[in-house]
Image (cartoon, helix red, strand yellow):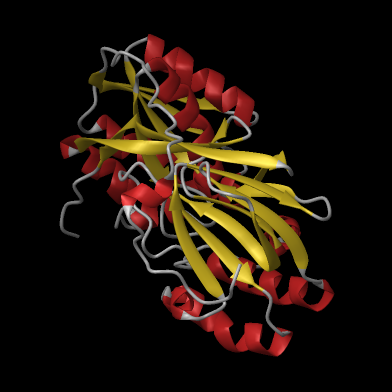
Length: 326
């Protein structure tokens, strides 16, 4: 692989013949006035629980039946989502991006409907929808929400909504998840700088759809369904949650000094215009490396290398709120 950036939108013919199929699930009968709020008590260092009473009050203004259930872990969240859908309820995830992805899996599998409220630290999926960070305002906006079909990616069979990445990003996430004294974007900026000192380039083998494997020596390989990660970094500015494709970002080797000089560009998305970043589009990507890494998606370790990431086009029914003027 060369370091030169590829054209932003390759032809559809370059995607190969591999085409993951949408989940073939009949839409469930769901009553928008009956809600199941699944909340992660530890999200945002307790932010979700602090906001819960206000969120419940906003939802109760327009929904006749609001049930709230705390979740123990991601697997439990998936089970709760499936059970709520079977009861004909809209599932409302109140927590971080990791909770939203886990809940999305259970909802999509059962043909249900999902709404996402920003109760975590990063809230990048909600940010990508153009929604505010205040979960009460988003909850109020659900009263007049529109339903949209969006894609659902999986890594190693586990669903996520935003960006799955591996390599340097894996080291960054380990530090970020251990950090307690910072919030939001500051956490990930701090973790990125901390991880930089110990980083050494990795050799990745990346297979996109049914094309020949390519080698990359560098920093990170990522597969993006939406644009943001890391509490506001616009890492995949061209990603679209409803185009049936992943944006695959390959970050090639640079010096630490060059990395530091380019790092601020990730907040605007201009890093993809440099020769060190290549963006491909795919329905499926397989990633291997010369040393062990965990694949992180939306803040959680979901798989270990080697791993395959696929996208299920239109698999998820998503409610997008209409936000009233403040």
